[in-house]
Length: 446
Ligand SMILES: Cc1cc2nc3c(=O)[nH]c(=O)nc-3n(C[C@H](O)[C@H](O)[C@H](O)COP(=O)(O)OP(=O)(O)OC[C@H]3O[C@@H](n4cnc5c(N)ncnc54)[C@H](O)[C@@H]3O)c2cc1C
Image (cartoon, rainbow, N blue to C red):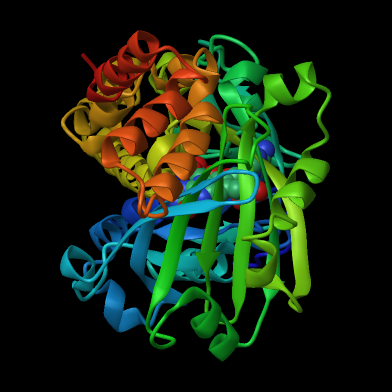
């Protein structure tokens, strides 16, 4: 079959259409093709990952679910994550709370830094090896319907661009226009439930990365979430990931708050990159890329209905992201796999009805995807209504640690009084205690 041209006269018929060759899409397509189905994977980019500037963490548990022989395929991963945790920035200080060794010594590691511009083409290539027919440079613009109104395929932006299949898996990412078109998403993206991620990829020699981040060798990597003097008090997190020969530094901040406070994302990023504890880490590096991407943070509360007659939705398009843990890639892969399995089951039963496809949700019900999204269902709201977590507490932590490790020769009773005062001058004690309890309850899902 010719990848580049649709023949005008033929009705192009597949068993399964997958929209979007990101992590969810290529996973869904591979699973469906492995069982012998004829699968079209339609990607609007020049090639999969072509526009993806992500440098973040991928999680082997999910990758191995799709390819049990994942490691023997020589995946293009950058570095295992051997140090991870939080950094708390004040205006001119830094408290680090990271872990290395111990649980993180596992081989393979639980997380690997990856560059999606490299990884996604490779991930799609693995799907092609299963028999998936990749159609790049083609955007799906609408759905085709049979006389009963059931989705029977997709309309692409190519001339005579109708492609037919009894089941379509939508993995279109955060801009879920197709999901909305189906009426599955309740509404357009809500700016207060979306973070804008802005970041830079900065090239540095591997030895420089190792020295600056305290990594013993190229076989060690760092994944850090940064709180405090990153987001100017707005709900958001910074991040730093070390790849093989570049560093990915950026932040994700609530889009609505950016707009309300009239803060330009790139100025915020620049401010973060100029911080006295961040700037030396990237000094002299060459800017390889910078860009912005939305992150759906509404989670459970924004999740669209995941299926309808002839259609399934997976990944970011279904709001499957746990923003606190930076878990979106594994949710996309696991959901993509479950969608692929559901398409296979539907073909076995020759039933593509909504009732049959509802088993997709059942497949995800007992997995971390649904469980975590439900557990964290109130987190986004909580953080938006508790800005103290973005400035008061990181600043207090910096002061408290500084005082504790600097209060030599001072009566310790006085030292503790001063530490307590540095909290209470920012937030009354009863409120701080309440914040902590509410945070705990929100995260635990109580
Ligand atoms: C700055 C940032 C940092 C992040 N860091 C992490 C991290 O460290 N770890 C983690 O797990 N997650 C992270 N995430 C989240 C993670 O990137 C996403 O959850 C994940 O990529 C979702 O995968 P997906 O396959 O659903 O969507 P995507 O990867 O966005 O793929 C969607 C694909 O569909 C294609 N497409 C869209 N519309 C159409 C159409 N109409 N026709 C054809 N093709 C179409 C797109 O071109 C794209 O290739 C981060 C996100 C951001 C923005």
